[in-house]
Image (cartoon, rainbow, N blue to C red; front, side):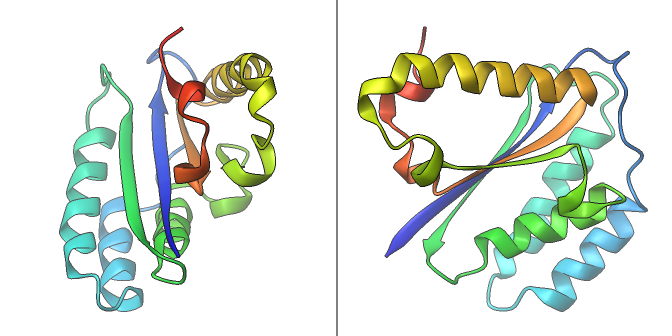
Length: 150
């Protein structure tokens, strides 16, 4: 089964608190090279995108990365490597938020309610951290209307 993992570094007002990257670029590149196998495009693409985003003091847009592949192809693993190299507590950081589409947005009759909840979660995340990491696991199962325009 082919699934999709989408993660977003949400950028919000520069004056908001931001985490300090843990030797971000050197260790991220090393970990991607040592821990990710058979996904050669991931190393340069991910590292370059994150470097460009994190070295911009006031990015105008969030960094969104979308990983596609079959179950077990390493999408969540790469997201975990990124979190571990970006935040001191890695996936356990209060700045990393994982949303599993199939278990959180399963009722198509509640799309309006889900939109309000999702917006509130994202705003809360960026108020706590100017560069929060939000992971949408199984993003291919997100109801189409959920991420659409208001």
